[in-house]
Image: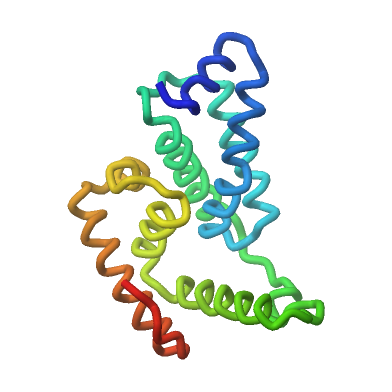
Length: 182
C-alpha cells in the first residue's frame, strides 16, 4: 500500500490527519491541473476543495496504488462539468501579460520568460496533448495512470505524449527556444 492509500485509510478509520496530509500533498498540484481547464485559479481552488469534499464524503473504495489517478480523474470530471455550466466573464487582468513588479535578477527574468513562453505554447496545443504532457511530466504520473485519468488506453497515451512533445517542440522553436528536447 502506498503512502497515499495509507493516509486515505487513516481518514476512513476516523483520523483526520490522513485527510490533512493528502490535501497538503495534492492541494496545489490539483488546483493547477483544474486551472488548466477553467483558466481561473480562484474557481480552480474552489473546485479542488469540492474534489476533496466529494472524495471524503462518498468514501469510495480505491484500489491500492490508484489514489492519485482516482483523485485526478475525479478532478477532471468535475472540471469538465463545471466548465460546461459556467458563463464567460470579462476580466480586466486578462488584458495584460506583463508582470507587476520589476525583477532585478537576470536569471529570474530569463526563467520567468521561458516559463511564460512555455505556458503560452502549451495553451496553443491540442488540449488532449497538453493534458497528457501535464499529467506525465508535471504530475509524474505513469502512462497507465494518465490513461486511467483520461479514459484512454496506454497506447493512446504513448502516442499523445509523442505527438504532444513534437508539437510543443515546434511551438517553442517558433518562439526562439531552440534547445527544446523532445
